[in-house]
Length: 182
Image 1 (tube, rainbow, N blue to C red):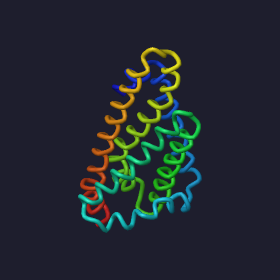
Image 2: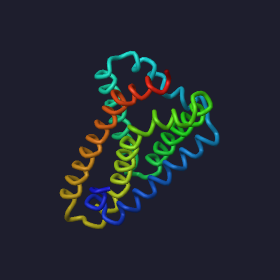
Image 3: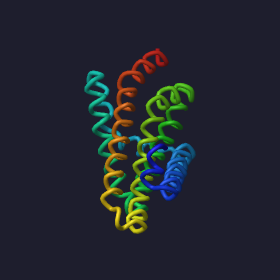
Image 4: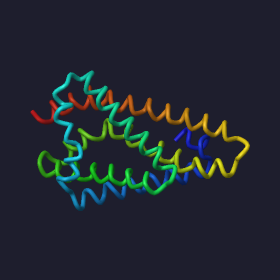
């Protein structure tokens, strides 16, 4: 995570590890206890799939960016942000478990992994940056402007990663879906 050390130093690294562990715990919990209710949180997904690929990308990007901003804002106070991260992991785990029963594990993996790698990286990054913010402000009080500027660049970096994920999800995942579901 290139900017984590710039944003948070060792605290940023530990925050990234904690965020990753919470996300993985959510995924594992979703796999072991899948819920259709977790999938219902994505009700608008069916509407989005009817759009053109370009509009899908915009809708996906806007949704994921709003989740990232909320995640960042709540991660500053640590626990609420980690709950959002766990919940996202739970949804992914539920999709994987239910989808694997319906279309097979490989198909689910091919549909989630290409964009998910970028999306989850951005979410973990935003969470880790926010978790490290109050610790770094307390540690380096005279450099608050520098810390906040670095945080802003970090969020921009995460937003760019989410744009890449949205592009992959709208254009590439759609092609993979048509190949594996035929």
